[in-house]
Amino acid sequence: MFDIGFSELIVIAIVALVVIGPERLPKVARTLGHLLGRAQRYVNDVKSDINREIQLDELKKLQSQVTESARSLESSVRQEFDAARSVVETPVQSVAAEVESAASAVSSETPLLSETMNKPVA
Image (cartoon, rainbow, N blue to C red; front, side):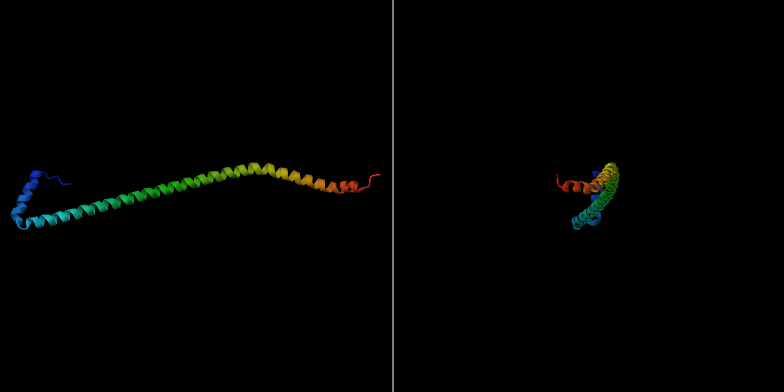
């Protein structure tokens, strides 16, 4: 943070000892230490808040990407399903129509068949 060497700290300590005095120097040093600790905690809190916001933003981007991927996957699956359904339904409908026509033909012939079956055999 600051480029202060050991010799510069010694000079600052000697000046503080002369200006503040030996009686109040420990109390001032303790207060300065508490203030420095608070400042460091505040800086760390701000850093962690910024990191959380960045992670939250990244998670939102990831969520939107996953949602978009899911939508495109659902769309492609739906298209494939519709294509497969149309491939299967066309022959089934034609077979159903043939079965209905055959059933109607059999039902129209059935009264004749039942009349011949009910006749007594001579």
